[in-house]
Each structure stands twice: as C-alpha cells, then as structure tokens.
Length: 514
Ligand code: SIN
Image (cartoon, rainbow, N blue to C red):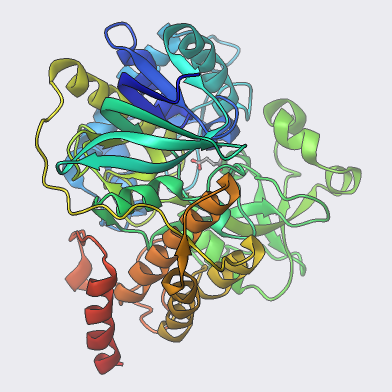
C-alpha cells in the first residue's frame, strides 16, 4: 500500500455513523474508511436495545422531544433535538430500504418496546436484542462494495494545515506510518467507555477521537457527562450488558432482602432515567439483582443475553448487576451538519457533541443520532466544497509521555474519582495524577499501544477537568459536594476549548471558592 495518498472523504472509525456516512457519499465521492481493528468492530455492533423513533399514531415527535430533554435534564440543544426526533420515522424507513429487518409482532406490525424514561413504547429492535448487529451486518456488506477499506490502522493525529483539517496520520501494528490527505475528514471513533474498569463498550472505544480533535485545536465540550448503564452483569466471569429493554419487558431490580430497589425512589420505578437507577444501585451497600421472572419468553426475546447467562442465573432468574460506563454525552462539539470548529473536520456519533443528549442520553437515542447526523453531514458534503481557509488554533502533534500508566491504573483513577459520584477533592486528585504523566518528558510514538494509552490519558484528563469545573449535579454528572442542579447552568451549554492554560486559571478561581 502507498503510504501517502489522497481521498476525497476520509472516515475514521467503522460504527454505524461512520459506515452510513461513507455509504451515503460513496456514489459521488471517493471514500476511504480506516479503522483500528476489523471493519465494524464498534459499540454499534453491541447495541442491544434498538432505535427510538416515532413510528406509530399513538406517539408524537413532541412526546419524544419532551422525553429526550427531560432525561437530558434540560441541558439539550433544543433545535437539534427537535430535528433528531422529527427525522426518526424517515431514518427507520431508510434503514429498512437498506435491508435492515426490524422485529415484527404476529399481526405484522413492528414490535415496539419501552425503555427507561420513554413515555410510550417506541423502540424498534432487531433479532430480539441484536439490533446493532443487524444494522452493522447490512452496512458492512454495502460499504465493502462502495468504499476503500483499510483495517488495523490506528489514527495518530489529524493533519492541520493553514488552520484547516487536511487529513490524518495512522499507524499499523508494526509501527509503520500512513499519511492520508483528504478534502473532508470524518471522526466516527465512538466514545470513551474503556477509560473505566466496568463498561459495556467495545475494547476499541478508548477516547481516541476526542484526544485527536483536542490536539488539532477543536472545541470539545460536556465531557463531564458520562452515562453509567445500571445493569452490567456483576457475577463471576466477564461482564456484559443486560439491556434496559429487559426492564421494559417486566424485569425488576431487587435487593438481597427481596424488596424492589426502585420503590419510592422515582415515579417511573425501574424505568426511571439511567442516571437515577445507576446511582440507586451504586448507593445500595449489598448486591442488587435483576429479577427476570416476569419477562415472558426471555430466551426468545433476549437471545444474546440468554446465551451469556450461566445456569445458576438462568434457573434462579435473579441476575447480579452493577453499573458500568456506557455512553459519553459530550465530545467534539458540532453543528447540525457534523461540522466541528476546525474547517473540513466532521464528527458523527458518540464522539460528537451535537447537544441532543443533554446531560443524560435517553435510551436508544444513540443509533437514531448516528443515522440522523450521518444523513445531515453527507448532505452537506455532497453540496459544498471543502473550505480552503481555516482558523483553528495551532495544533499540538501527539507526543508520548516517557512514563505511561498501566491501563488498569488509569481506569482505577477514573473509577475512584471521576465515577458515578464525584467531588472536588477526588477530581483534583485525578487531575493531578493524570496530569503528572502528561507533563513529563515526551518522545515520538513508536507503537499503537503507546498512541492509544496517550489518547486515554488525555481524554481522561479532559473529562476530570470538565467534571471539576461543573459545580452542580445534572444527569450523568453527580457531585456529592454540589448535589443540586444549579439554575445558572440550566439550558446553557458550556462551550469551551479546555486548554491547560484555561484550566490553570479556572483552578485558581475555583480553589479560592472552596
Ligand atoms: C440497552 O439496551 O439498554 C442499551 C441501549 C442504549 O444505550 O440506548
């Protein structure tokens, strides 16, 4: 392979958002998709729940909009949230046209499930609990035919020339570099679940896109809002997700005493917003179980989960659960068309912060976001030329700290200090400990492991810093020292490029307050 080439569109990452954008552009543009492992290995493939969309007369975009902003604790970008929910039906039709098969009831209508914080059943699913797999299988097949695919190349840096994005550099498993110039670059690298010890995320989801965009001078925002899914498996062996749809079909959380956990804690009980349920489990001293005895035909409805359950769990119908890092609401800030603050650089899917999820994402709105904004971005790129001038701040190319933490050490810091509940002292400790690695002497990258770990470190530091600066509790960001939401932050998204300098100034101000 030529280790320096040009493509019209460069897609970094291969989940639903990246592959769908590639597919929508490929008839008119030369598209290259580069991914750090195999094509399609992503969080999207693991999505169990489904896609939330208004597809019945008993539902309305206004209801879906209200559920979304209520779950997001009114931190959402209202304009883009309205766009998101209004486009739901259209997106589902597009996926069906592409060959995606959604589950149907015996009468031939689509089966719709209810999940946390939805006022009506509106989640379409495929293969029971294998919605992501169905979408990805269809998309992977199409993109293999329409685009150039390069696997096993990890993105190292975005190339910024004259203030605009002009491509990206990559490294393969042997440490060889590849430079790809492009008219448009699309970051579709997913979120940052792998910064935590318990996560539903694919092993490839290590916050790379956020760190790269930050180094390129892009605005990143809302990184304090990490969603912890309430029901990750907590028994022996590897952890796995137990979809919220299980509670949508009658599953209940019970304490060791046999008492229902969510009784008296929220009017929606087990279907309360995720942050509320995750905190309730976290605060319970003893083990919490997901009681699946009331779910009819569990094995047929949830074949993936059933295949993971061991005999004891399956026969007792009480599955031990714990919260785990699931979805990052913040990310690289974008507008309606996925455009970031760096010209010609786009971000789509979980890596982006469109603002549609606010402080806490509504269940099954993530695949919807990926599909809606892939369409918006593709439409823009098909109708515009690349921008020839830009104003991005000087980019800082990746340099690897001489001393890097073991990934498990980094995850422990994030879990202990930037986890479900945070406070100023812990966050300061995290910032100092992570910052100490980043401040040390640097060298050039020589392996994908070093690149990944440095990205993890930078994204962790940005998340800890963002969490320190938000002195209130809202959605996925809960501060024990500031337990209430603060009106000052309501409906006001904090836009900032978090720089080391800015942090230093804020820290001084904040310390004076404490
Ligand atoms: C789930 O199935 O519980 C996860 C789906 C989602 O995060 O929306």
